[in-house]
Image 1: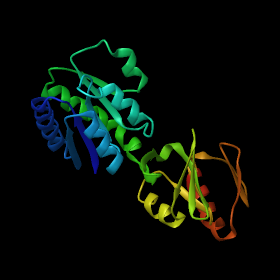
Image 2 (image 1 turned 90 degrees about the vertical axis):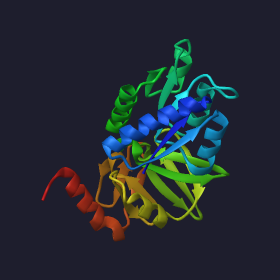
Image 3 (image 1 turned 45 degrees about the vertical axis):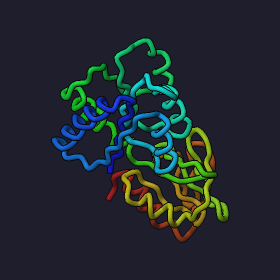
Length: 238
C-alpha cells in the first residue's frame, strides 16, 4: 500500500487537496493510505511512529516549522520520499533544492495538476517504493533496497551495509530474508551471516564473491548451488 501525505496548515486547503488526490487515485485504481496533517510537527510525529511517506505534498509556509524545515528533518533518515512542494511563492527555490524535491505545484491547486503530479510520481515510484524499514534507538528508518549492498548478521545485531553508510539494528537475518523475498529487488543468501544484493556483486567465484566496495565474502557450501542458479539466471542462460 502506498502512503501519501498532505501537509498544510490551512484546513480548507487540506480538504481540497485530499479530494483531488482521492479522485485521481480512484481513477488510477491505486491502493493507497492517504494521511493529512495541519502542521509539520504532527507530520514528523507520524513519521517517527509509523514510518515515512512514499509521496508527500508539503506546503512551504506554515506556522511552527516550515515545510522546508520539515523536509530537512525527513531527509536526515529518508532519501526516497517523493517531496512535492505546494506553494504560492517561489522565493524559497534555493532552500527547496537542498532537500531534493520531486516537483513543485503552484497555488491555487487544480484537479488536473494534482492528477498529473500523481501520475508522474507513480511512474518512478515502483523502483523507489521497495524499502527496508527498521527501528534503532527509538528512531524509525526507511532505506531504499537499491541503496543496500548487503546485510550482515553480527550475533543479535544486523548491520546494513549501504552505499553511503552503515546502520545497525537488533534482529535475525532469517526474518530479513523473509521480508525482502516479497520485493522485486533480488537478494541472495550466501552464508549464514550474509544476505547480499545481486546488483552489487562485482565478481563471482566458485567459493567467494566480491562486492562493489571490494569486500570479499566466502560462499558457504550450503548456498553454493542456489547462488550458481541465480548467476545463470542473471546471465540469461538455460
